[in-house]
Length: 467
Image 1 (cartoon, rainbow, N blue to C red):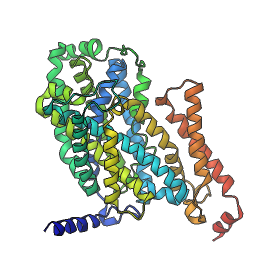
Image 2: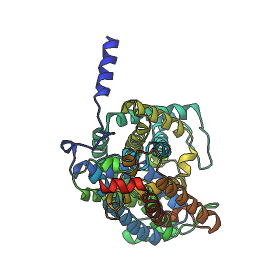
Image 3: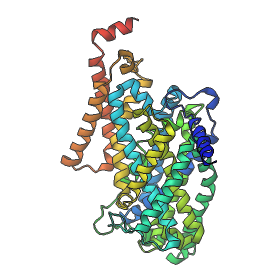
Image 4: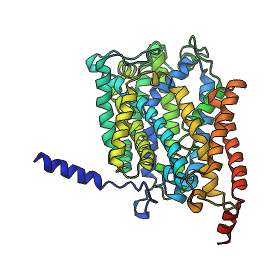
């Protein structure tokens, strides 16, 4: 009997097809609803409990926060809608498979491994966020700002429990990931808002004018905690814009938007940016101030909204980790084409769960989010140019596939030189990591065009053009 059940499960897993090596067929394309809830659920999530609190710790003032979030989130929505979505709808491929066509198998594999590892770290942070709430009934000690290693065996067991559930949902595929987010988002958003409103009286807020006073004097005071960088409106703008740089400018959300019927569905990201990266970030800042500077999301939410708050943290962590592990699994899949996607995702989930045991990842989330977007950004510029503009520039799209090479030096030089340029700006010009993405992107655009013109001039390319 047990053998029959295992055989049935294996057969069921074998039938899961996410079109990871081919364009998504027309019959599988989705309308607005397939993206509105997914973006809202993914970005009204576990990271919001951490990022909103860290803005408070970095001393952002109230007006700087509001203005910065409006501008930065609008720029992020435009990046999804005008950069990532048109490429995804045109190719209907994952970023990872499209890169093989452009860069060749060897360079694409190197990039995809880096990409997958970065996503594993992000998903690991979300598993850890959810674990801070799951561990509450068992009175497991929660990580503090300066904790690097796991704090107890109970913490490790809780992380592995949460990681297992999240991995199962990611294995089920995009449809289940999107469905989970659609179901979870409305409730999560209400809990975020309700919890913030519930703690306002403890900050002395009894009216709208009282909120303004508390916001300026007790929450977003404009004074950074000891040892932390002072944030300005520019930090907020660029962080809000580039917090998901890997997804939109870096093109990783091709994995999601390849299911879109129209490129305009990229505007669905607005639900995540303004419900999550605006209202939820502000709500979590209020919760941190009411909790006297505590940073562990589980206890903060429980103290403000009880069991509903703790459950919100759990599900919020899941709705971010699910699509992130899904993306990471697709990236590893392109490197291990002989493995079934569910096996790769299972391995990815295990690796991510091990990472999640180290709480330092959560406590340094702002810097990590900026770093992983920066590392992946140059290849997003490569894909954008190759798919949408190369024919207009009289260059050959999908160069590696057409020429039959495994390593496209134009793309490689673009990636490495852009990161080198950003490192130089950081080390020698003193530019913080949050601001490096914009100049880096323009450098990547310029380098890739120049290098492609130089490389495409050889006789083989001329022969291909004549054909």
